[in-house]
Image (cartoon, rainbow, N blue to C red; front, side):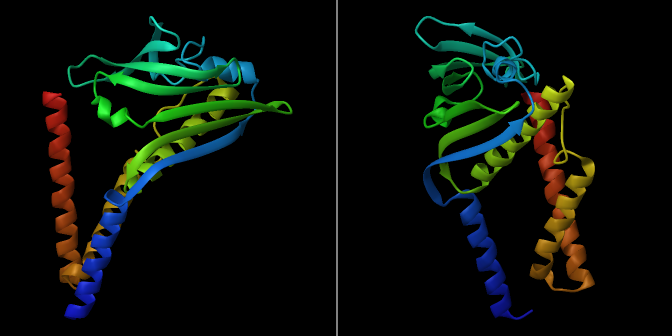
Length: 230
């Protein structure tokens, strides 16, 4: 492979990394909406932290009102570094019963407060015929588009699971992203992306596959360390 082609590939990959991880995007709002065939009041009980069905997804274990208007402590089913359930102190604002509310995270037992400094989540419900239009919005300050894209798909996934829960009364964990076949597919894609750097030959493909395997084992080591040390 000529040096010019190598330079173009290297510049392209570095540019992609910069776009995904570093480019300053400022304050951005991601909004996703979906029409859910369920009563607005029932969905409010699921999405409002104090609702009777707030634990529909298994994420929220309990919500406790604190001193001060709109202040609450939410206990999550996820474990923090200390092995205890994560607790978040939040401010609930612009509350309109069965219609909308906004939430800011003030404190988190797992993540530093600076992570939530610019974060704001808004949920809106609007009746449309016999169904309800559910809109989720998340505002935050971003560097790189990767996390912004992640949040977009995470909200789409949440609405999809909410729709299933409203229809069946059951919450299904997981999704296609965690499926082993998806992970294998990502690994194969990674190997093909690296292939040109080692030469478009069988030997180059073998080196790309070996490097992908090394990276995968490296990340598995991180996962094992997190499990062992918290």
